Length: 158
Image (cartoon, rainbow, N blue to C red; front, top):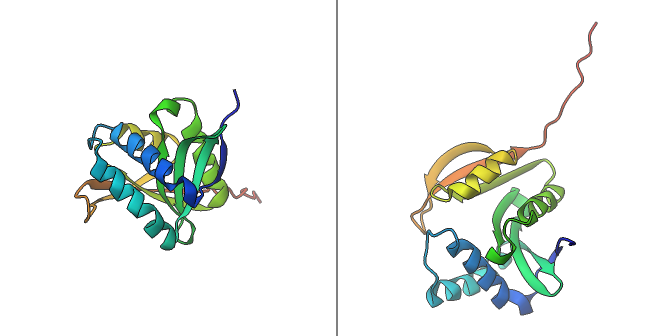
């Protein structure tokens, strides 16, 4: 089975993208599903895009399977959310590989401390823990991570 196609998200898809975002986030058990949360995410998408997000989706033959939000000027992987129906199928790894092609030298991200499954995955994927700090909006304690391309220099022996 072929992996979904990663492509830019379109404005006519924002409602569906917000739904996928909510489903993925609430699948962590950290926040319950609600109409209020969905409405907040719907409103947030155009604001974040206006603020510099590059928004991508994983398109599985017409079904949005994941969303990916990158802030390229700051090398920030802001959101990587896979629909529960598509989790465990290497889609996250494919989205991360795509992210590394967009930001080949360095990537920053923040992950909720209580979302252990996510931050452990990022650590396995080569991200290094930098610090913890509270999110001033949500109150969640955030783990900050950085990934850098390894620049291996060959040692010259005399």
